[in-house]
Image (cartoon, rainbow, N blue to C red; front, side, top):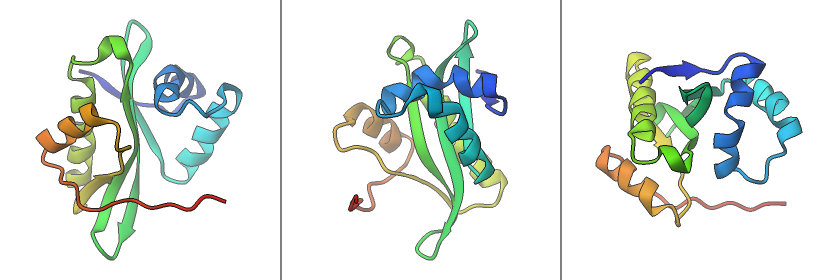
Length: 139
């Protein structure tokens, strides 16, 4: 599977349909500008394409925390319904892990909605462990 990094507006926009499944609150007309701003802050948007369209995507970024050290944090990982079960998300997850290892990082971390049991199976099968609960307070 060919994994590409979205760097151009065209590639970022290719990922809209995929990311919108996971993030339906986003507005399409603001998506490219938001992702470009995030890229300037270190966000990396990787995707797998089929027939000229992104079918699976992951967004991740470098972070460093006292509790785990240098790591990549996966913000987003999703595959369009017709592409599920074809190994796309698994390949993207492996890609991020390989990139983290190549850069000498100590881990890959992510948060996942409690209702995403299919995704959880993938993470557990890839050796991830459930190590915490995530809490937030929105304003």
